Image 1 (tube, rainbow over the protein chains, first blue to last red):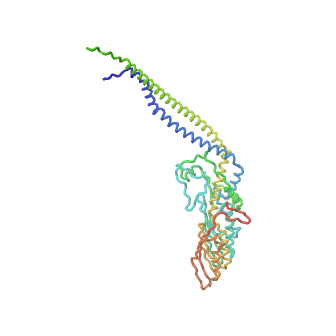
Image 2 (cartoon, rainbow over the protein chains, first blue to last red):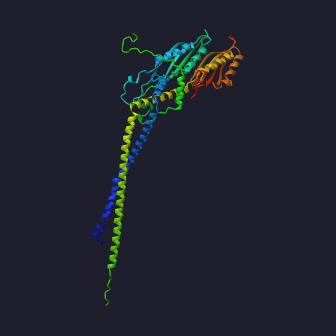
Image 3 (tube, helix red, strand yellow):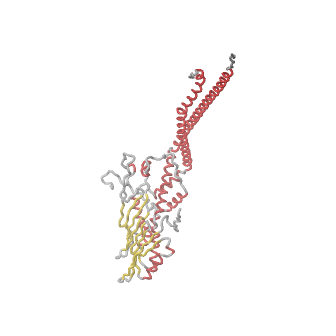
Length: 262
Length: 201
């Protein structure tokens, strides 16, 4: 039987150890390091992309003429208000009807919530559903019905003039339906209208996320600014030509007192 | 008796030892080369890692600066204004696009009834375009004129799908009572007017 030669063993021990070290280094050092590098690379790539978005946003913010856009927002707020502004709306519709020579016989509002965001009850869970509105009411719209009556013979012309003014009212108003009926006895016309007006409430990030059905707020700091296009400018130009029938300051009454009208 | 032959084994042993020495040297060289390669790979990876860490730190610092610039008071005001303005203008556009222009509908109806001599009793106009009108005509000629006018080329952009759903002759009044269903086609931005000069975006 052949004996193991110790000199032979000594001769190959170095190379054997080297191979062993290499074999151990690959799974214990190289592979974990590669995995870490991959993660870090991804992190750096994402960070770089976000930084580019931030820099683009800074450039876009620098280009904004704040005073011009603030004035435009002030005008657009009259067309699409942040809250329902019921008192001004009622006065506006009365003005419109009065100018057309129509009499308001009835007006029916179902405004639902008119409270401000601050007055809303605190929600304990982020996932709770938004408070429900009366049936037929959407948060971004206010619908009301009104009954108008015209004069003898000219009732149809009066409603035409009313609708013409209403379609060009600065507080945007649209008619969902009109029912016209003629009174056979005195030949006057009465008109039942369902009118709708848009409302754009200011929402917090969480409320917006709930509405969109997402769980978390988006990265609002890096979120690009919405572009102000020529279409927006044209819409603004159209709105600027509309007539404001609701520019009446309705004095607020004191709250928490016995008689708020004193 | 033959003398034993001398065999020189030295050359073979020396040859084998020499071969084994060369082989051992080659193995060792290969092992050292592999070790050096591994070391180089580790060094390269470590260098790349350091580069990534430094890039990450630089990006984090630049991001922080950019964030604080964006969230500064002046820029926050600008952003809120822009977002609110664009959102409201988008809403206004959607609203104006979807609203039926009933003033045009009434204008055309009034003209049609006046020209034909018929009279409008009831009318229902809905935003989805459904229109139902009932009226009276003193003669078949008046009724015919009204139908001609309603179905004319001039009104084809305003009313479509015109259907006569009922026509009754009332002997006592000597008049025709009729009911018509049709589709109102005018939706969207207010028409261009002499005073307003509005145009569609």
